[in-house]
Amino acid sequence: MWTVFNPTPQTDPNTTAATTLINSRPLLLTVPTVQQIAATTPDLAGPNLAVRLGIDTAEQNLIPFGYGYGSEGQLKTNLNPISQLRGNIPSKFATPLGAAMPGFQNRTATTSGGKGHSGTVNYLNNIAANIIDFVSPENAPTDFMPNGNQNPPSARGIGAYPFVTSVYDLNNWVYTVPVGTTYQVVIETTTYVQLWNPHNYPPDGLSGVLTVHYQNTDQVKVFANPTNQTLSSPPDATVIFTANPNPHDRTNPVIVSPLNETGNLNQPFNYQIKAANGYQDPRGRIKPNEYRVVVLPGPAPACTPDGKHPYNYTASGLPPGLSVHGGGGKAGLIDGTPTTDPDPTVTYPHTYDVSISAKSSCGTANAILHITIYQ
Image 1 (tube, rainbow, N blue to C red):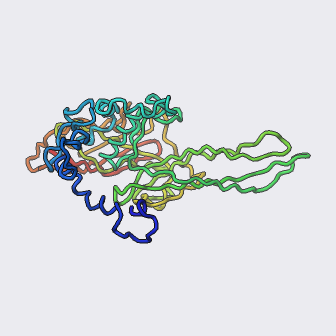
Image 2: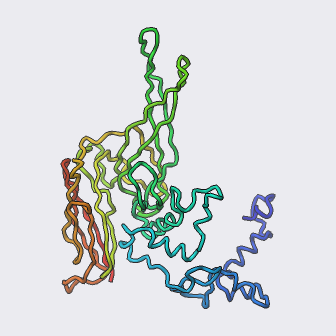
């Protein structure tokens, strides 16, 4: 930081304003301490602070006063239990955000060159999605309103999912085939996709299924033809990251949803069992801060489940009050409201080891799901 004030020294001289800022930072916590520093009459600090704390400890349960927030003084939106956040519409959070910060969505207004609140990405909904993923970081990004037409959803979080940091095409001119008085060229393209896991949870790495859809736009100039020839895109690659990979098994399905979940007594609970068929990366889970390269075209699954009835799900050993949807529109969903266990020896929090399965025409995937219920 000292280089902002004096870029010449090679080490911190401890004489710049940076030192003053750092040394004073512990004092800049609350209105009373800021008032002590400012020591102005009348008070010029309090009315301009976003948070007006009356004491130096304990977080208030109300939206803080300051800057004319539309919902100041009202109760904060409760994010617990985590299981309630899945499947909920983003308005549960976008609405209080919009009330607390009126006009906030207009910072991307079309008149300012942005896409606006009703553009491809809904600004407030995107913040709501990231709030959900911050509270529940072990899950894949929260998508709201994906339309299934290869278009982006209206909002997306940054849950425990790898980021694509680089894509590289290796184009190899394999050979030339004479056809009459002309020639045809065979070009082999290998695409390398670099993934990065920026998340530190879970500590043993990310597991799940990743489908890579890559649209190749490389072109070859043909001098005898005024039209450039676009190279073909590789087929979609489905790569599975799991703790115990078997790269030679591309037939049987694998459970790819997180195997740890939490809930609260007498609060709605939702958990979605997910299974997939694909290529199991032999390196297993993607560790925190690890870079991993996926090569396209990837090994295709040796078996694809029946599209009409892809999976049938079971779950045994569920906490009281919960049940699983074996098929239908909610296939694989474990939901309900946890109730007190009739077993008098059960104390809370209590973890249930639930046996889950996903059966398809390709085989059956089995796993143990750990559900911890809090009182």
